[in-house]
Length: 424
Image (tube, rainbow, N blue to C red; front, side, top):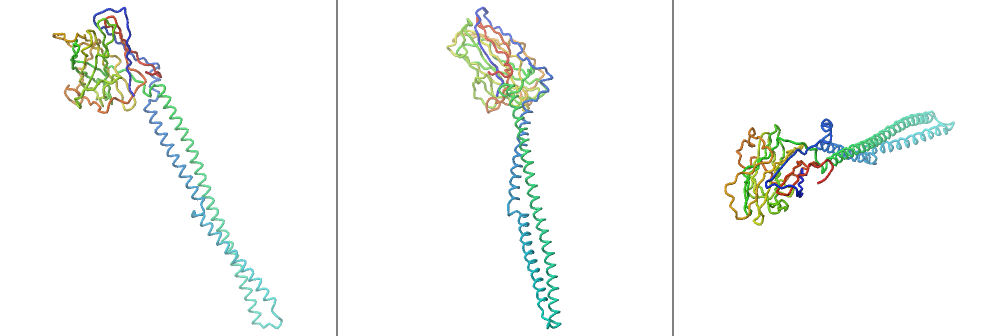
């Protein structure tokens, strides 16, 4: 995502001047009070909140899955408490059988006593009585064993059922937690989406930063068609904070002498860095690769090349430069103004003689108190140009100035910054 500077051209027949006239005005206008803007969560903060809500939801889903598996486990006949309950029931059944047998033995012993004949000896009577007494004792013991076994069955079943109820409650709690986490996640995602929609193209509200300056040196005030000229673009972070990523911006515009014919397709800008001597064309959004990072008080130099095709007619041109920054915490901004450096285009084969450097149309920033990044000299590039291409960060604002310039009888306008929610 990038901050886009929108450039548009228009013809103005009433303007007649042989030189370029450029007027640059700040293009940042807040639609909300400062206090309100400061209180509003940033995109980065909302992204962090959404990520945290996602983590909580993921954990809740995992906990619910674990609770469901736990409930299935305790409901199984092979769970420890289910096995214990089944064993207790088996033992109780055995105890019941043993009691039934013992009770029958008592009945049989009583019948034996009753069946003794009158002629039975004392020994026979004593033996029958003893057998009855032992049978009654065994029956009483069997009854006690059965009662104990039945009690163990009750305890085992209670333990099994309590475990199942507890597992079911945990699953219910986990399901409720998942629902709550999903609601929080949905709310966080919606808040982030809304903020991105309000911001436009998913970016932050960017702020003007006059201390991020761009200065051109070495660009001739006259360029002969069919030639190439090299110059330097210095980007300076005059603030007291590191800018995580700075995107240099450059745009060239030209017309014939009348100012009525646009010849932008005959002028070209390229750049190169200390890391790579290969000349690269400035992209179609007029940005070069990012300087990552640009420390407080430091500057970075970018080598530039302007090429004017041999078929270009004599005319006038202007090179605009600026810079935008993005920080990892979501803040962003850039120059409130575009610097315009004016130059004449001489016909191919002409001899321009001694030529002075092009001068900016606005006051040149004072960068005498800033140092090359990392203590390096002013040799290009003092900063580090990312080798992976232009930044992917974007703002919903176009950090552009309103600029009016006349080239002969033509005029070019640099569009004011785009309002929140609009699109380039």
